[in-house]
Image (cartoon, rainbow, N blue to C red):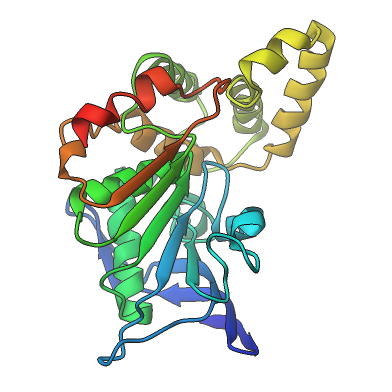
Length: 298
């Protein structure tokens, strides 16, 4: 189902939902007719066989979806590095993310299959083939969790792209990141109401507490040190309230995938030209552990 398509000169803008025939997870479980939410913007170019040659896939961050393409306006506007007049930009809401196939949108909730980042990649790869007949893209761009997807794609399908750009991300979950994910998993599993058939206030309060923990990943180290405790209290509350309607079942399986993410033994598979960007003062990722090792691994 496509909601709308329109053209401005040669530029195509498209937003909609597309239904796959079925999707098979790595664990063998199959979901019939899963929906995929997507947005595209740009000018597709074709080779002699009718294949799109200038597609760039944008993979969204943890709390994003296909609309995250708008957050990259500064690098996709006219005259920018990925000018939408020159490239065909595609953004897809990931497996596990509303309003694509997820625990909340399918109604499966805690019965939804556990999935990996390979499943996330295969979900998008299947969509690209069925919707646009794309079997190779020019490049991939990913931020945060989207970077996990890009790393996975480049490791599992190294000939699928010419370049990758990864911002604020890593090739594995370890150390502090693993501890945070493991603690969050324990908080969720300690809830007596998680396997209830009713989404009640107790589950909402659990998510409120989790979102306060997650706030610690957002400010830089320098900004944290500059803030008073009262300022931190207010910002934590605001962040938690902004994320109040995040579904705990969607969240739990995203956290599971992140907690079990590790490509250290596959990074050498990458063939694409690679650009990795992490701000110096980033809290969750670092140059020392998430960029410099790549010199020996890729």
